[in-house]
Length: 361
Length: 271
Image 1 (tube, each protein chain N blue to C red):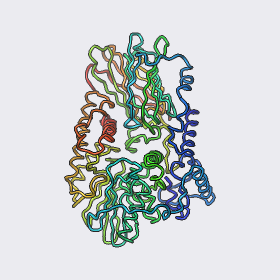
Image 2: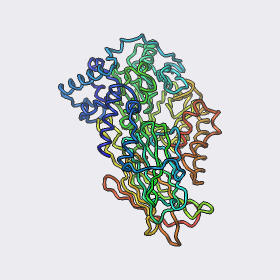
Image 3: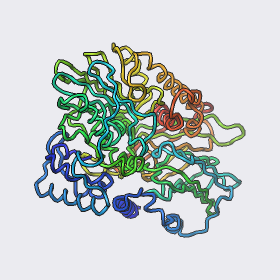
Image 4: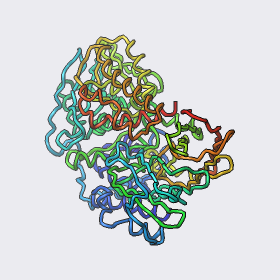
């Protein structure tokens, strides 16, 4: 991802948006000594210029739109949002996989308005969705968007980050988010460009965190504090929770799936252990990463807990019986089929991941 | 293989960039098997799907970085073949691994997990003691397995690198062979995973050689490549000989690291 873009002058950043597929081809030209996240890259003017020209040339030859700025293009329709508590707004994503028709709008996206500033919690699955979320925020308040929080690395939660670049916020994530994205960016961009199609994907690029949460961090929006907590490996190895203490609202990201089958991309043992801890957190309401925009607490965790415990028990039994991972993928968890949406898209994959983890016990 | 790898990656990237087509489509025109047959087997005749070797693979892989394959070799003298080569036509490094079997090997049933980078034919080619070649082929729908991140928890992967485990299974009724599963904690970095923070590819680091013996007798020797999944996992059979036997495994990786393990052969049930 173009870490450099974060500290680039806005005009230059807006001028060139080559499209992510180009990145591998120009990778060699872009190697640069970025000392660490959040620091300006040590580009010389000439390097910056040659990099820019290179992108432009390739973008033009590849037939990519060279975007003049966020304000150009089709008018942005604000996302529909619900105010679930005072100053807390949530947009509910569709229960769907990435498709051109939904533009990657498949995860719940939130924002919290304080006296002085706004914090965004997850930005959607494309630049277009990020723009629509930004428009929804602007329909509610003119206060500056100072914080963009990513609950974890998955594209449906952070591909909209670029739509907020013009606000120059802190992009905040778990301390392992940057590394996790670094290892996956290429693939995420390529795969999702294909799934969304060029129109829905246009303008999408990755922005890595500029601020890392190691354990716990507090953000002050003016008379309103958000408590951010970096969690141990569970849904992924970079899950971050957000607690709005003013209203007792807990944003769980994908640590909580409701109706949408849970997706395992971290550790099933870690996730179950974390659920036990999270259930004891005192919150009035929670916002799941997928599901309704608001839920009571902690009852909605039960179906997910049951699913993960079922997978875990059945996989352990198959390992003990000396059965294979292939057999497990087709037989484990089937009793849960009717309890979840998108079961067929995720279950076998979850089982495969759980098997590869649990066979090391 | 190195040459093929670099040529392929360059072709793939340029193709993807200029045509904005997925890599799979950009390279769909040629049939890589023709070249592989020449390069790997010197165009020797290969009997296809003649029942001597069977290959089980999922039609659509749930996780392209972890695609389970099972190979069974049946029939008389051929049941202990000289070697088994696994290939994935459209992977950057198409030869997954070659297994050479020794006198400690049982009737060959071998299962492992591989990375599949594009919709591709996956092949198991067996060479018999008599020197004839036999092949089973399955088409697997998966993509991106070679560039996918190795493991879900990066810290755990580093902390446990080199750990080995052997599981032994109860003997199947009527079989003279025993079954065991060797697991090695190793990221098996393909060299195709780019670190976007630095713009550099994570250097290839993978298990190149593995030898498993029962006492002094060779069960199998494997030469592996980047298409084996992270945490290499090989389920194999061996021929038990008597009391107080020990199974040993020695693995070497591209960094020159040598990993060793040894386990007493159990008489009956699962470890």
